[in-house]
Structures are given as C-alpha cells and as structure tokens.
Length: 372
Ligand code: COA
Image (cartoon, rainbow, N blue to C red; front, side):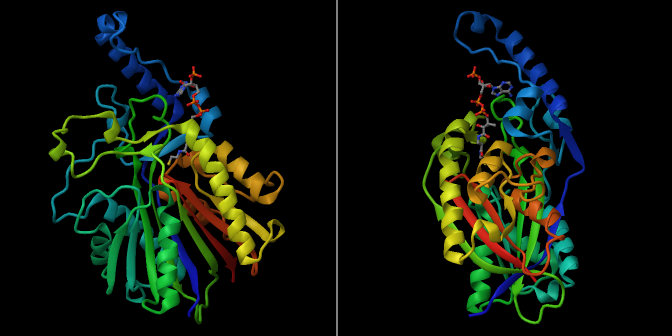
C-alpha cells in the first residue's frame, strides 16, 4: 500500500459578483411584476402572491453577503431570472471543462507538476452539463493528460468523495496521481424566482492534485485517512433528468431546479456530520486538541458554527474554522476546497486539519490531512 498527499490546489473564480442588495432588488422587481400580472387570480385565492425578499434576512439566516456567477445580467433581469450562457459548439470547450482547466493549471503550478505527471482526472460535481462524453475526459484532453478520466456526482459532497476515490487508487498502486476537479455552475440549477432559496448558491471551480506520497519536495498535505457515508433523503432534490421527455414534462417545472426543505436539512444534517467527524477522528487516533483547522462545507454560517463547536468541544477561535461563504455563497462541492486552498498555507509541519463536505443524498465525506 502506498500513501497519498495533496500537493496542489486551484480555485477558478468567475468575474461577476452579485451582492445581496442587487439580488433582492431583482427578485422584488420580479415579484411585483408577477403579483401585478396575477392580481385577479391572487385576489380570488387561486394563486399565491410572491412575498418580498430581504438582504437582512439573507445575511442573518445564511451568513452570505455576495456570490460569484458566470453570468450576472440574466440572473438580475426580472423578466428572466436565470443566467444567459450561450450554447457552445461541440468543437468548443464546454463551460465546466473550461473552468476546471483554469483551476487545474493553478493546482499543477502550485505542485510544480505538468500534465505529464498526472494519470487521471476525476470531475466530481453536483451537476454535469451533459450526459456524455464525460466532462473529465474533455478536461483530460484539453490538458493533454495521458491515462483516463471519469465523472462522478455526490452533490455537495463530491469533492471529498473524489479525493477518497483518487486516494484509494493511489494506495492500491493503479495510478500515481489524479486531479480531482469540482466545477460548479450552481447558478444554472438554482431557482432564482423562489425567495426561500434564491440567495443560496454561486459558481466556482476547484482543483486538487492528489499524488503518491513518495519523494515529494514541496510543502504538501499527507492524507492520513478518509471517510464517506450516505443516508437517503429527499430533502435536497432536483428532478431534472433524461427521462423528462418520456414523462411528457418538457415545460419548466419548479422541481427541475434545486429544491430543499432547508429547516429539515439543517436539523438532520448537523447530527449526521458531527457524529461522522467524531467517529472519523477517533478511528484516526486524534482528538480535538490535535486539530489545527477545520475546512467545512460552506452552506450556512450557523451550521458551521454548530459543527465547529461540536467537533472542538468549544467555540472555534478566529481562523480555526475559516468561512468563505460570505464571499462565494454555497458553491456545492467546491466550498470546503476553496476554504482549504485559501486558508492552509500558514500551517506548519505536523499540523493536522480536517476537510469535510456534506449535503444532498444525504452525504458526508471527510479527509484528515497532515502538513509536511
Ligand atoms: N427574505 C425574507 N424572508 C424570507 C426569505 C427571504 N429571502 N426566505 C424565507 N423567508 C421567510 C420564510 O418564509 C419564513 O417566514 P415564516 O416564519 O413567516 O414562515 C422565515 O423567513 C424563516 O424561513 P426559514 O426557511 O425557516 O429560514 P431558516 O432560518 O431555516 O433559513 C436557510 C433558511 C435555507 C438559510 C436554512 O434553512 C439553511 O441554511 N438550511 C440548510 C441549507 C443547506 O445546507 N442546504 C444544503 C444545500 S446543498
């Protein structure tokens, strides 16, 4: 059995940001128009009026201040309320591949590696922009990597599931290294016309280079252990899919976009994640005192505060559990990796940290790393 290490990370951040105020202005304009257009039906009790959204609610309920998106104008157009991403010809790079290539080049550069040093590409994300060929194979082709690539989807937990998959292949000796990329275009499956969730998501892509831990010269993170778990739930769900035509349901339907029962998710996922992390740490032989940093999934600030407190047995101190969701919002699988990429350089040799992602499925994955 070989050991594996994370040797490089990269984050592709889109150009456009949307502040809570901009988002709320667009939503409220849309809601007013909707209510005016449906005034009679609303008065007759046949249609529900759309309530107004509020920036204060968004910040207090989630901790989110802004989000990055690939396209801003379509999202903020009250007559549209979703991004404008022109279709690309088959000969052009797909959106997800383009974002992932940018993040991958950063990860390779940080690790001092080139495409020749990579054996596999895993594209782990909560949505893939087409069924096939796999986005990972396209990324492999664009980067001129030998070997193979495949896509996987475990929603918000995709990054840690991808890292364990890469790590296991490295441990077994079938590959020496893999890029685990998480290109997330959440803006395209978020329902921007639903005030309960319109503030939740943003777009981003992350890349992590996982290599065999042998003769590594640059600073890196040894992967001490990984753990995954799933437990079926319908509380976060998206029913869009290839059977849509066969169901005679080609029209726009609410459940073709992101759906969640946020309160239930909050209540059910917290114990699942806290117990998962506690079990993983115990089996790895580490206690809360050994843990220098927690890089958690970035969905909600109160959720992270709660998990941090449960894991450490006290409120996390400044910097111990970095959040990036105030700037990026929830970026699904990419969130914990953005936090890891941006807040890990300062750790010293022997320092231990834990990456944890969780979400739809339900699913939870954790990776315990040690700086070397
Ligand atoms: N502006 C103003 N008010 C809003 C609003 C908005 N944008 N959205 C909802 N509200 C209202 C609700 O209608 C509700 O009103 P009511 O009390 O009169 O019924 C009230 O604010 C509270 O709404 P609720 O949905 O219960 O808020 P919450 O405190 O649970 O926060 C989430 C909502 C989504 C931020 C929170 O539940 C959450 O983060 N859940 C977990 C999400 C998660 O991790 N998902 C994983 C996705 S991958």
